[in-house]
Amino acid sequence: MDKKATLTLPDGKSLDLPVMPGSVGPDVIDVRALYGKTGVFTYDPGFMSTASCTSTITYIDGDAGILLYRGYPIEQLAQHCDFLEVCYLLLNGELPNQKQKDEFVDIVTHHTMVHEQLARLYQGFRRDAHPMAVMVGVVGALSAFYHDALNINDPQHRIISAFRLVAKMPTIVAMSYKYSIGQPFMYPRNNLSYTANFMRMMFGVPTEEYKVNDVLVRAMDRIFILHADHEQNASTSTVRLSGSSGANPYACIAAGIACLWGPAHGGANEACLEMLEEIGDVSKIPEFIKKVKDKNSGVRLMGFGHRVYKNHDPRAKLMRETCHEVLDELGLHNDRLFKLAIALEKIALEDEYFVSRKLYPNVDFYSGIVQRALGIPVAMFTCIFSLARTVGWIAQWQEMISDPEYKIGRPRQLYKGATRRDVKPIAKR
Image (cartoon, rainbow, N blue to C red; front, side, top):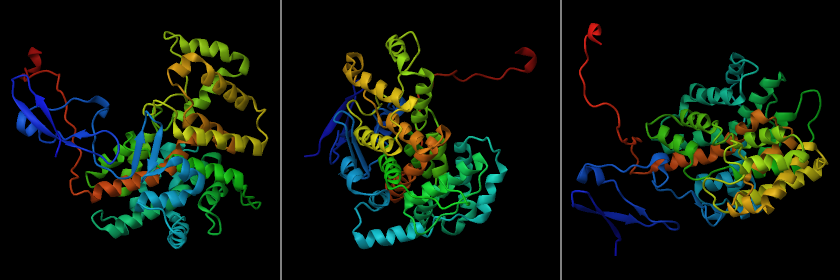
């Protein structure tokens, strides 16, 4: 029997609204007919209680600390898969067998180079430009270089665009970094894995052979996996909203990058490192914690707690393991900032104030530490995030375009401004 919810209006009229069940998670009340039948809208700032779409890609249970990609727990994917396997899963709905993986890796590998004219585009930016500003511009410009497959209604064109974005994003990110420090671009190498190739393009120089460190490559690969998708967050919703107008996929991803740049979204791990620098030393942690507990101080504990996860962030435990593996590999446990981070983590996990409020360390706290250990400057953190999230954005964009119910996004509003009034001649105003 179909479930319905009954809405009673102030005038006494009532309306039955269909209740749509998901495969897991809360039911959803279908309010699409509300305005047409009653003349009223719903009001939900931040869309905290609104489902904007149906999706089969990612599921989050914030209370239980669960994150699933296509039904697979993030813990298992991080343990048993590499990033390109996860990319295949997000784009196709199933994990690849060996033959499918080999073919997928081969296609991505042979699309990693960018048009040489695109490489020259970097020269139009100042060297001290924020890398995310460069990323927005360069990714947005891709449609000017790869306009042979921009028909969003052609499934084959969409697949080609997806491959190009996943393959070229590491090259674009690495070029953004190299340009900012005045070093020559390192072109991709087809004999390296996706993530090893990225690290070579980031840290290699033409004067010597780059030595691949498997521990560090695996750490970066795990960062990519843990950030690949996260349901209908702000940047993903931005990509979907941009795509609903029929915009080309490169423009949509550029819009997602611009949204991700915000400190409340992708800039969170950058804020964590800045917080640690401000604390400065382990001896100053008690004073800092005291300020955090004082509501009037304005001091916030960055990298702890999460808007969605009201329990442990499942990605944080995995990133914590990776964090210690990297610190061990590089012998950095005695580094001032890393000692400070571990001490702060210990207090937050034991102090009743934080435990009772479930302010556990989140993925941003550990990923910031790992990236710093890998030699990635703070300004590049969000670029790394956008690289990882691109596959999720593309999967979500693909799903939206393929959805027969999709329409151009057009949120409603509660208007509180002036009512109709007439313009007076300027002499009488």
